[in-house]
Image (cartoon, rainbow over all chains, first blue to last red; front, top):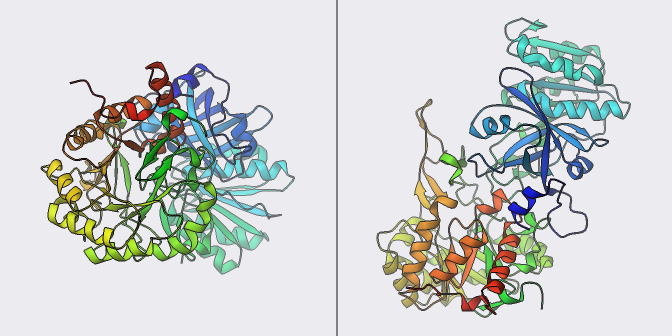
Amino acid sequence: MTLHDRQKNLTEIVAGNTGLPAKVDVVAQVMSQTRLSADVCKLVLQAPSIALRSQPGQFVQVGLQQGGTLLRRPLGLAEVDNRQGNISLIYRIVGKGTDALSNLREGAVVKVLGPLGHGFSKETQKPLLVGGGMGLSPLLYCAKWLSAHNIKVDVLMGGRTAEELFWQRLFATCTDNIYLTTDDGSLGLKGFVTDLLPQILTKSDYDKVMVCGPEIMMKNVYKVCREKIVPCEVSLERRMGCGLGACLSCSIDTLSGRRKVCKDGPVFPAEEVFF
Amino acid sequence: MKKFERLHTNLLGIEMNAPVLTASGTFGFGEEFADFVDLSLLGGVMVKGTTLKPRRGNEGVRITETAGGAGMLNCIGLENPGVDIFLSETLPRIEKHGMNVIVNISGSTVEEYGILAQKLDVPGVAALELNVSCPNVKEGGIVFGTDPAAAADVVKEAKAHTSKPVIIKLSPNVTDIVQMAKAVEAAGADAISLINTLMGMEIDIERRRPVLGNITGGLSGPCVKPVALRMVYQVSRAVNVPIIGMGGISCWQDAVQFFLAGADAIAVGTANFADPAVTMKICEGLDKYLESHGLKNIAELVDGLEE
């Protein structure tokens, strides 16, 4: 089967020849593309075989059929709708790959490899999600999954400005309490998520904190969690080539030696990677 | 007999279902791609470059795409667990996939190639590929890859310490690739892999810094294919040992060009990142090409260029 054959066939084609592979490479049709802010887009793709296999915190490698890119782009799963067979990706336009992706319209097709990596552990009854910027994307899937499993979720989100916290309305339907901070004070508390975190952790007895955002933010959140003795999981971001653990572009140091963010992560216990 | 009957090949005494291999550093240890590729259908997997001691590789950004998606620069820096872990953990684990395992080895001295060759002279290893041309490590590599006498010494040392076929992967970063090929053939190399990556760099103009952590890196992908093809063409006319052609092969049409230029087998590298099942598609495409051209075996295509 060549790529050309795939383009003709808009229904999903599962690659490989094993019985039930953990991950698949499919040609997915764009269902919708919407702008959430000046430079953030939401892409909804019809990809039932990926939706079926996905767990919160996992990601996919998106490949454009045209548009001058060679490598795929790793994007976290922001929503998974198994009833419709759709997955949503929320991404910021940061370079030529994401720019080309943002130009796709309903009916276009992309290659989607996934789901990849290990997601958040689900052993929690009272989780707090902490996100900054685009880190809120995988946390959205996490919140929706937990909420669908009758687990109440609180979220603490930080952004530079109120405009960046359009996330608030996306999380509204699947969370109990939403705490907000902005760098400029235009929404919520003026400051960083770590300014608000100690009092939130003191007020409620969370059994897990799940974090995704800029690395410095995740490190500081972990510091607070360590003081308050609350288990903390972080989702890391690195440049990736293959997404399968082969190219070693995303190798990091962990307590248990060298690990690959794409395969062993992207979610790690915080103490494994911040030491 | 498995699939792709027209592609069956015996290279260096190794039975290959198809003369389509995967290039070292782009396919891990094979197992990472098992969801997408029947590894036993490949001619072999040239596993991640292995060194005597573990290596953590380079710091900072390790991969970047080049303009227009024409290629990729990498400076991984031979991160690997070391030969002892490879032998005790990796090799026993990947055996179940039934693939030919070709171990790519890198030494920082001539003697290290001998030690590595000896350690890897074990069942489960089909052949060795000497990496004398990694552009991303400071010691060793590049010197052995650009000096014909040094490359010949490395081949002799490896050959003296193993019963396995010894393939040497040559660097394109030389003035005269034919001179390098003749030198390693005379030293006893059983086959030649052509080509490793071309040394290159990219600069971030806003930060005024090199994009890659190691400043320079190895260029691969579709943009290097004409260079690789030219070198396979030149070398195949100058030596008698088999050539494994590689460098930017992304589809079966690319592969056909390499066989016509004189390659006895081909390896796929960077294209595995864009499409993890690309090797299977290349096998299917080659098989159909042979059928439509009335050829019974891929060997009839090798060196079939009309001049």
